[in-house]
Length: 440
Image 1 (cartoon, one colour):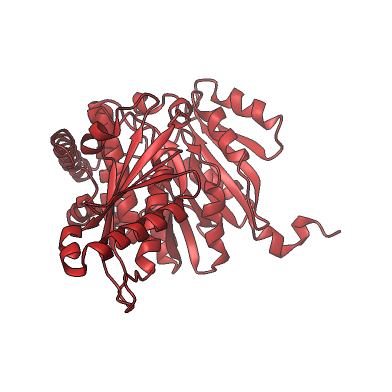
Image 2: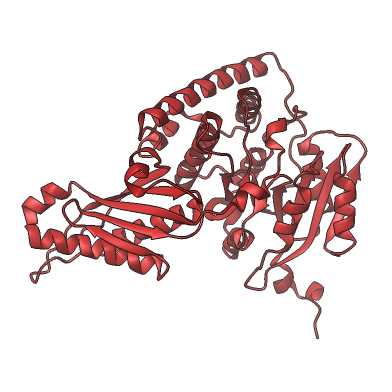
């Protein structure tokens, strides 16, 4: 039998996963377990998992060494002195032996199927780098939780159109190294891969759970460092992240649900002000030539991620609404408008599956679906419904007329003892989007 090492086609589907760690004893075991447990398809394989531990002063190395003693794929490279994450990434790139490389932060949890989603894109030889969908586990009911969720929600909305890759990325082994003084390693990689002529891809299915800052000081420190890093990449590598543009961010804010209630609007405005201050300070750091690649760790981001990522979310409510329903009712008649609402409900029921409970409010053109799972999964499923509805003509009468309604949605996630639907929908909306159906 031909060994995998001697089979070029099989080896082309191998990947090396790199985890850069500095004092990560709280999360490293859970992070590695979430990677090694990934089930890959299409002959893909995690050939090795390399942990580069730089100057760790806690139990990180001991934990990794113990895991490596039970899993031959895990390899520990221990650096006696911390030299920055970019330097550790270069050590990983040099040590990795696979044609596909994956970077995962040591404080992340990788959702089942996320790695397979990333790697599937490399069947297209034009694709050079793929990024996942970071999802924070912070409590969104607090101001900082709102700020962190808003940050990553906008990242998701922007990346769907203009990929901005971070937290977990996969790329072809075509990059010999990245600048040692970069504070935004994924963006530096993205710049190099893009400039080599490869296509960049963002996959919202590749969910990774992280914990954002829980204090204003940590939030400002992190955002200041990242913006300064973006400025340096733009100046040195000639590459600008999509999130650098205030206009792109403003467009992403529209329809994001960030101003759905007075409290949400106030918190969103507060988050914007913090970001403006952080960007001003980041600009100042670049002007003063302050180095940012050896950053101070934000303590509030290093708490356990797994407990909150695996918290029980018994159900979500997805509310779909036909925009301008009353106007359409006047134009097509009461019977046709009822038929239109039922068609939307059919789409919802078909795409969500048997686990969803679907109901209709005929008078307003609203469809409500209750479904299990976490909010991120519910949001992805709702997007699928909108895309499906968008691509399917809606025939309302015997004459074959096609109605082109606009469909909007909002996701409401409930904790174990959540409030009733009537009180939750106005004040707890987490995400909204809209799409226009195709007219043909």
